[in-house]
Amino acid sequence: MTCRPDKAFLAVLLVLLALPALAGGRDDPLADAATAIDRGDGVAAEVAARRALDAGEPHAAVDAYLGEAALLRGDFDEARKRLAAGGFDPASAQRGYHALGKLELAAGHFAPAAVAFDRALQAGKPDARLWVDIGRLRYQAGEQHLAADAVNRALAIDPGEPRALKFQAELVRDAQGLAAAQPWFERAAQRAPKDLEVLGEYAATLGDLGRYREMLAVARTMVKIDRTDPRAYFLQAVLAARAGQDELARRLLWSAKGAYDESPAGMVVAGLLEYRAGSTELAVERFDKLADLQPDNETAARLLASALLADGDASEVIARFAGRAARSDASPYLLTLVGRAYEQIDRRDLAAPFLDRAARAPDAQVGPLAPSEAGDLAIYRWGADPTAADVAVPTLRKLLSQGRTVEAAEYSLKLRQRYPNSSDIEVLTGDAALLGGDFAGALALYRSAKRVRWTASLAQRIAAAERALGQDGLAEAELAGYLAQHPQDRAMAALVGRAAARDGDWRRAAMLLGHAARLPGGAGDPRLIADLADAQLHLGDRRRALANARRAYALERASPRATSVLAAALEANGTETSGADVLLAKARALGGEPALAVR
Picture 1 (cartoon, helix red, strand yellow):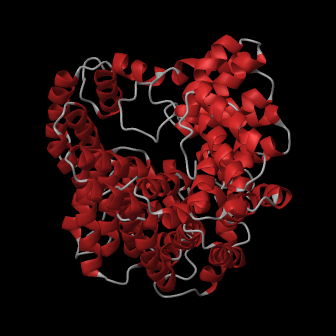
Picture 2 (tube, rainbow, N blue to C red):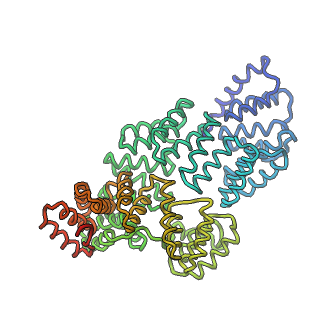
Picture 3 (cartoon, rainbow, N blue to C red):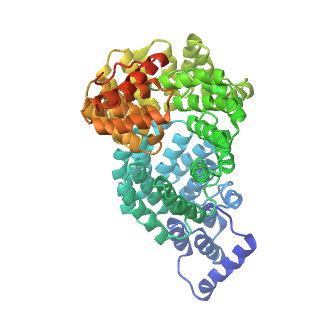
């Protein structure tokens, strides 16, 4: 549960629920408590455990059940009161120490959680759920490689344990992709058809795969099981927002009763709904919160900059994002927003460099990312322990962004020694190796990290290392493989589509670029639409090519790519020949390459 009932009300409820037991009841209240815990009913579990106390059972036999019941109710103070001292009898020791470990893990106390889980292992027979929680501890503590071993142990003990299947599905999703994880989530849902956590993850994965009808069916099943469960409504709100049904999305979001107001996903959905409704000031509030929460999140920065610009606050866009846009790794979208902000304050001289860079920006490149202000503050705070987990990422970013690759390599070696089972550290160390010219070393580190968590960023890093080693075919296969597992990733679809175009595979290029253009945000990307038009020209689909070329040019008239593609499309269609010549001259003046398609 996510909230704690009023204590006075809970006391009355417990008495009322206990009345039947006082009149005769069942023979084994602790067994009843265990059954209630298994179905996630903390109130019924406490009622049964207190019946055991009333029947004369000592606290040593009952406190494990009371503590676990309190955990289920979200009453961590009561749980700690019952569990922290230990002292459980042999029959309940494993349960008690297991619950204590979960309590410490929820509080972020990794070392005490590990001690409690070790004592639970020693106190009873092998337990699949215990190994699942050990795996979650390892994952959250940065020992991702060891987490996989824990879930394998859990499944060896009980191949059908739903929590083990769910955790395995999550690890497979991270390491292999959405499509590979979906059968594991389906198995978990079959084993636990009323487990809302399992169903929620299953539905979210179906949605990320673009299987929206199946996602909706699972979400509606969740509502039937528990009409108060917020995740079921939030998942449907996301689906409605994707389909452009904003009013329905708002109603569904309202039905979630604010459960996602403080989560990044909730901020994105709510902010986008406000933005599309024209309530740009409210959108700014949502995206500002998101940017504060995730200062290094490029998507959060773009959303906030876009909302600020739509709200007429160009000066704030410049103040907050001009520095970021000046970096070599700035995205075309952010460059365009900053350029438009300068235009809004009539500084076209300052706008031009940003817009020019946006028009010529290549595909995303692997490069050092400077630390944020929060990162610099972390470096200052952890001066006495420079390899602490909280400071590792900003420190290495700072070294790499300043070109101090030798120091970065030395520092990353210390991190590897301190965190030998962390995939995050492997990626950071790989970055230091890549930028230091050790491409084979970087590739080995990236591939090891990929066994735990395969992201779009890591796929691009692997491809960059493979290209540097002359393995272009493997690089393209890496990106294509990631796209196959994450078919709704627009940026990756565009990246793989452009690679197909470079190889002259125009049919595949048109298919991939068209898919990317149909995904959310694709219709407003002038470079993507221009590239699609170019592919269509090469396939002889002149009518669609001209329509898309005009659309790309309307979106960004300063783009040499959009300008020259439109010129080629006009000429291919045999109309407006003089207009094509004018556009070609403009493309040359913009610095583009007008020799496209049929020209």
